[in-house]
Image (cartoon, rainbow, N blue to C red; front, top):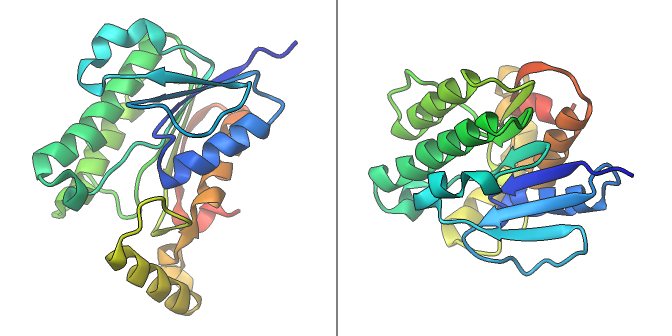
Length: 217
């Protein structure tokens, strides 16, 4: 009997929502654990929901168990309201989760980062993502998958006018982005989620950084 389990962070987000659907429907997994601040509306016999206090992660380390970790955590500076609050999530939470799950012996870790990520960037958002990636890459995972998608497309539970306009613009102009600009095309969240899962289940070892235009390959 297959007893493989997946531990998912950020299951309420655009990619995380699609990922949970895929993991639950895949026969490879016997158990799917969604770790978050609150229970999600989705229910399934394979799904277990784990309530986590992200500000007290270290006290809950023994709960972070499984075979594969999928991290879809992320916010925006606008939503977080301050740069400090943004960094606490996109750098602090992600690197702490990665470190604790590595310490717990979990061998495979997949995370969603961002196109343009660079630890030396003059852009605070991209620099923070780059610094996060550098920390995670130093940890001892058998398989580490880092996806760097462009603008994510999909049905968001939280409708924001600015993002709706951006989504329309991306869909109109994406076909014009060719050659080196192709990686800036918008990408469906469900495609990102499928790539995350497939990369882990293929069983290749090493560190894989996948840019947006290669996610749909």
